[in-house]
Amino acid sequence: MNSIHRESATVVIVGAGPVGASAANLLGRHGVRTILLERDREVCPFPRVTACHDEVLRIFQMMDLLDGQLQNILPDLRIRIHSGSGRLLGEIHPTNRSNGFASAATTYQPAIERTLREGLERLPAVEFRSGHEFVDLRQDDDGVTLQVRTDGGQDYELRAQYALACDGGRSNVRSKCGIDMVGTTLKEQWLIVEMQGPESQEAVAQVFGARHRPAIQIQLPRGLQRWEVRLDSEEDTSRYEASDRKAVLAELGRWVPASQLHEILSTRIYRNHARIASRFSHGRVFLVGDAAHIMPPMAGQGLVSGLRDAANLAWKIAYVTQGRAKAAILDSYDIERREHVNKALRASFQMGQMYFPETLTGDFARWALLTAMSRSRFFHTLVERSIIPKPMSPDGLFVGDPPARQLLPQPHVRLADDREQLLDFLLGDAFAAVGFGVDPIADLDEEARAIWRAIGGVGVNVVRPGHTPRSHANGAAIEAVDVSGFFRKWFSSRDNKIAIVRPDRYVAAFTNARRASETVKELGALLGARP
Image (tube, rainbow, N blue to C red; front, side, top):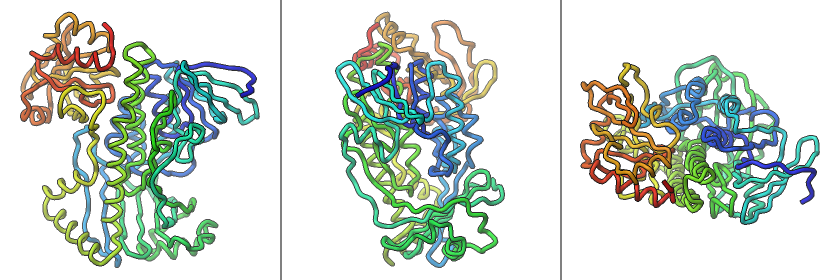
């Protein structure tokens, strides 16, 4: 490569969409010197992302950007499913709040991106460069060198320990690394229509499940509506792409009155993809978000899957580059994320089959399922949990059996000064030991304490409702009351009362006071942490 000059950083991220900007925020909170590159000067002008799950909000909470993102959503999504004739068959209303938020919401992507970019301004370790396009890369044993071109035509090189490809489904970085995508591109074309209507506070997705020309209408924040209509695979779409209002309204008017169809902002034609990279890394380059996997939209798993990637990888890179862990832990990124991504892909297909059955038998099965769900909250919850995959890694950086490998639930807690807040605000950006009715770090021996300090660990003792939490003292765990009694139920079926939690809020190990020192040492050996 021929370059005018060379600069350096610890990490270079290519692509400043929601996933790339989130990775930069997470790395910046760990103090990792990061340069974020984005080819375009402005944020994406239309909302490719519409679904915002509770895990998305929890990751924004990790970034200390929760308040900003809460302004970008309509919470408490309800999915209303209609027959081909337009008759309402039933409603799916996700109710699980184990992450501390309503399970699902709708969101507005341009506002997400602006919130994330504003968040970068707080972080001295992060530099954001818009109008800078990735061109090529080369690697050696010590790092990766990227060739970058500004929109003014100037070439330069960036040298980094690691690079993250967050440049979308058509990732140029992935292509340069020679990584294949496996899977399918579905034949059907979809007409995507964005409309501007009056403000609404109700998050609703209307699914019209005709076997021919099925459609979805989604209410977004700020009065925006999104329509998706399935067209024939070989259909001439030129009239839709030209935003022919008459042609577009003719499609949508089959489902709602003309009075509910508003100003058309944009129209696009899209084909759904279900693809996953053959590997999520190549040497010191990691694929994140759509660069690693492309989701069909039916289960709304695109954004949350990408943010899970970012949360999983950011803390590991931070620990490695800061000498808290060995470089081998980065191999766990592919191991931990691939299985869950595959489950999310399958869930997307299952949701699509329920929304849009292809046969009369499938139509009847859908009606029976929705009828049962509407009559039984227990059955509704059971179906909800079976369709949307739980984030659980089959292997990776974990000690012992489940509930290790699962996300730690997040209840509301009350502190000694009577403030109430969500649990994660007490956990910080590093490892945490969360005890239920026990100080989880009180009985650590000298060696375990040294390891715990090396990985930045903190301790939190969650006590039962009715107890009075003590003020925090140096060397002791923070005490907080389980306001709703959620943890009492979660811990009650388990003999162990201490959860060792990773920075991405996954339970790394489940133990008790007697075995806490041994567990911390096992975890330290797994990480390669040195006291």
